[in-house]
Length: 123
Image (cartoon, rainbow, N blue to C red):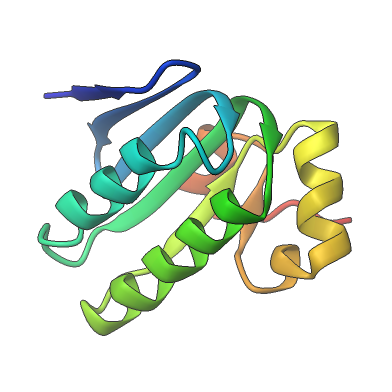
């Protein structure tokens, strides 16, 4: 089962693998495009205790709005008893995560396969 929320320059696809829900992001995540991610994070919070993996491998750009949406989603996930983990950070987005310290807040994995195997990425 998957659903897609679309913006002009950004899409979020919600998929499921055993033990996790995966949000696959594609495009540029910024103030003008963050709503589909906000909606997807809100929708999947209702699902029961699974890990939530946010796949950034298709994201070329992420600004502070995108980071804030992700951080808000993390707080909601924790209240619901689950975690959000980040996978597939490309260089410009990884740099934004590192500069802001967000990479210290989330468990970061190289890709979905590594996340499912429990192998966090080391900096």
